[in-house]
Image (tube, rainbow, N blue to C red; front, side, top):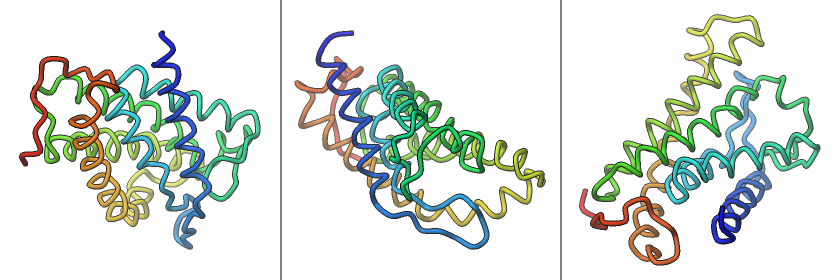
Length: 191
């Protein structure tokens, strides 16, 4: 891994930490708060690609695991990996990988395509891990956990749109800085 890639991985790990400083919105129906950190997952996968995007999330979670209070609400330490949010945190790594993997295969980067990829990797994949682990840890059915987790969908869709716009614009304007997987692709903003 070269220095530029290390810097980008560190940058996106830091972005996740900064997004964690924004206070979460606690809900009475679920122990998992609404945070902006899923936006960071979508940006990392969309801009760094599969390998580096997932690595940035892994490093962020390792830093959280050693006690840095960088998750929304000032949470940190090993206890977050055995609580209701544990699956969502694991989903960050896999979600960033899936987003990066799918974007690396695009011939053209467009807002609509990146939005669909964000929904697949940044919402669906993260939810699969999050809902499954939360249901197991709380000893409730997956169906019940899915119904409660539906409250996150509108906000996550807004974050997916924001990330799609940012990723599309940055792929086009910073293609000489960011090492895009789309080396010979066309950069378009067409829907």
